[in-house]
Length: 447
View (cartoon, rainbow, N blue to C red):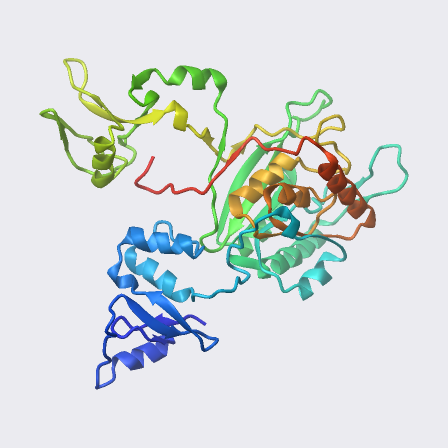
């Protein structure tokens, strides 16, 4: 239950209790120490809670980070205060908090051979990330190889049965998703109509990522080659989002940094909005020259002045042919790469001859799962894969230090996962990814 703190005395109440408290005839008294208030926790113990109203937005954000509270980005001061008040201070980790893990030895990787519906009905865990790569209703039977007689799993549904089956699965998964969690749903583009209907009935926000899994196919004759999968990113509140970066094109990288100062080589980052969008209106005076942006600057004046004081602004004075302009200096040594977009064309589908060999009919690349997990979780978080197959999600979690819970009804699939896990442990070349994992602080006033 949410608790609310009196601005004056610092005591905690329910919402209705706070209203009654404020209306009492005899006003409450402030504590002698204006910065610290003793507040009883649910366990009856005493904890020290900062007087949030005395702090700046920046200080409140730092408190959120220290307490591993998510959802603070973009919030105003009053909203930050309410977020902190609604998240009680506790020494114990609950299912919605980040749990930092010192080593992978303490991680949990559990593969459950079970019916996903029955398992989820009884599951009590809360997951920051749920990845679903379920049957597509493709009308096919899947085998390990064409010459095999035994079927690994069948993927034959009528549209009505598939929608009913999928609706139940998504609903059960949604119950197990934390408030700041993300559900990822992976489907071939040509089978995405019914899944999108189901997902939009359950989630307020849905983003589409387009994965170009392969180049054009030479075997098609009567239709265009299917090379795109859609990965739906679904959430209902403010989820964890760790921006990922991919390497820049080598030619672009080497030829973009043509300016130089005492820090080193740098490229120019645009600070002006064009006529399609308006920004922050203010004037900058430098060496007696006035710089303006007709449609506003991308950053606030305070940020601009800070960058100028740090000599991170490139000034282009006006002349007969151009007006004056300002650019942010983007240093070569500080480049993380290109921020990830919703078109993923840098990860290829796996084959039987690669370092990440295909051992299961619908197996996905480890790098793909690493990217998904890194975006929506932090180290030590819980990840769920209810249709785990060969356990790629578990392998990716192992490399990224996340806990993973997998479900599949196929006993042979679990054996494949166990072999892959052994191979990973015995390999000198640990599976790596081509992204840079880091928390994002991007906001509307930054570029």
